[in-house]
Length: 217
Image (tube, rainbow, N blue to C red):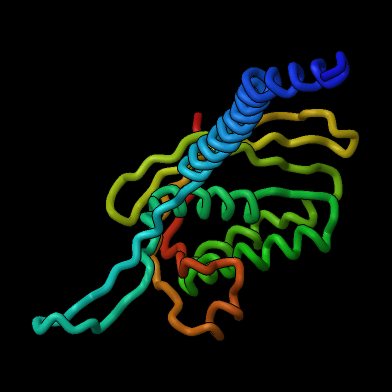
């Protein structure tokens, strides 16, 4: 056996005893690293999905025999007073603001008239605008509304307060008033699409049945 053959034999024995375990160990280390990375990604994904998950309840109504008679998602619990608060301040803004754009103000008044019943239209708004023509007022001045307070007085009666800033044609402030209104409302939820389409500004069917406003000293 020559030296080269001896060298190859020694190298073969070394590979069998040392190189193969070393390569196997390195391969297992690489595999373990990849596996750990996959587990980490999956864990992050599960945490993200758990935070994003939403449970939507579905209510099924059954009769006395346990048969399903009605099903559907529950309606959201909407605070009625918050809706009425926004509704009343919207009405005050539409009915008492004065702007120089005549077409826009006419549109505001038309919307305000749709928010009240027939009694308020005839016995309050018509009389008020007859004595306080907003279009004459807008020739030299403007009026801006700022909501202040809202108080529930009884089941259907509310007290609202607001301030009105009057400006001249150069937008200089002339004076500011504070007013209060006592308002009674009724809710008639529309049950037909045609009714909703005829008055899209009032989807909740809220109407003002009585109102009286005055300046605060």
